[in-house]
Length: 400
Image (cartoon, rainbow, N blue to C red; front, top):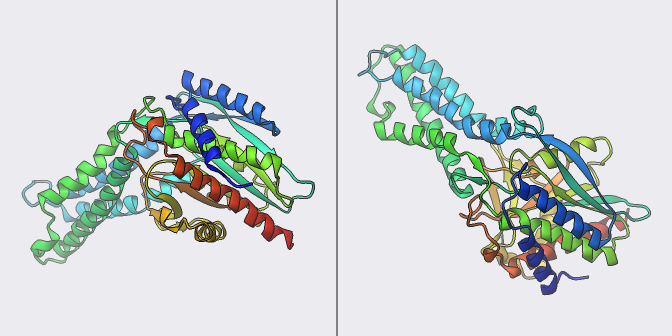
């Protein structure tokens, strides 16, 4: 049961069907739900839906203002550290630079901890996950493929947002440390060396990169072809393949998640409902997010600050698969420190093995993320990995 060029073409065609703006709460989201529901009926595997509530608080408040708050703390530190200003006070400067350093250092953790934990505030939407399952008589393990069906646009493309986060974090930490040490030197009664007095341009880099994120509002202009219609199409195509040749030891779930783009709500809801049902030792998640574009496919091996590693078991299997199928030069391992998140975050936070296949493209979260840029060769590679991963896990479980 190989994943063929024909399967990739099928996935491409389905991705085109849902490649239109489909932000949570929009008419487009409802239309996408109808198309997905009809496709699941045609495939013929058992499936059901689970409703959940969500809001835009995480994406519009937490994600947009976490870095500007750090920038504001450092701005206050700067105002009280500049000898040309009458506000010059090294104690206040020291305290606010310390607060800014701590806040920025914890920003990645704060963002990741907010997914699935922050209460819904503001307008509340009702949406739903789609869950299709293939269950053998006596399953010994469980592989869950997932991809999100919602889309969004933002003022900045996804890659620009990531760059702003990284530049804001690094420049902010370095700037804060310089102001902090300068304040300590002044408090000891010694004149600080010129190195410890941040130049105006360094302050501008810190403040512009951090405060710019406050303007990154959410809209509904992106067709979301690569992010993530292709992921949904791929897991639906996988469900067709495994319908005729199901694994003997491995339960398969095909999870089409809702509201990923505004706070990873669908994935968080799925694992929250099953926290005491799924066995962390034998349950694995493969998250498709942003596959099917030209260029190398990203295998996310770690993310966050401090770095959290994704599933070593799954990553090792994927590395084996790329070796066996001569795909080594098509995949690159990737560490994402801050600035973007996907459904793997709440899943790993709940204690499960998960990894992610995806990509970064400048058109993500823009009106240019259209089906014109879908590459069938990349879709096939993602599908091959999906099939082979299930076969390897099934073989591993057969010896238990």
